[in-house]
Length: 122
Image 1 (cartoon, rainbow, N blue to C red):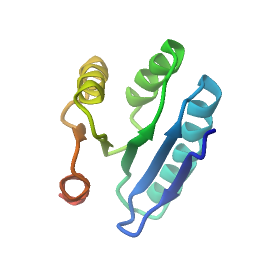
Image 2 (image 1 turned 135 degrees about the vertical axis):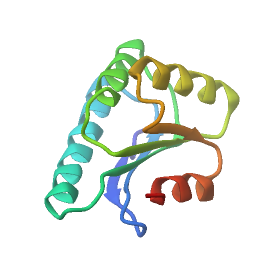
Image 3 (image 1 turned 120 degrees about the vertical axis):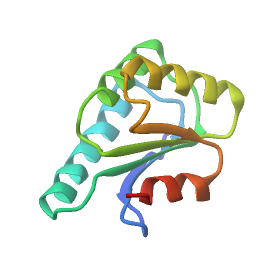
Image 4 (image 1 turned 60 degrees about the vertical axis):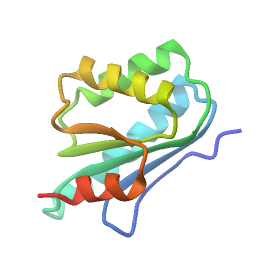
């Protein structure tokens, strides 16, 4: 069962917590929520930083991965960090980031503190 969350965390970063197996619908719902928060951050004159917390993620169908690539190609964020815990996920995330052409704006981490520090760098 999915218990995904999208919120602004204590560091003023939009955090997307992905839990369990995903569908195109669940990915779209998280994206919509994140884009709404991004718009409110921009309206407040704040940078738009995203933390995609994948520590609890399950399976994602191929159509879902394609949707993620399309969403990452958007210009709705200043920085995006993916947080995961295994090498297979790291490999897949790095392929996705390369496909977006935004490797300077988006990175994969397996350490939350390093992830937050990078997002908060000006």
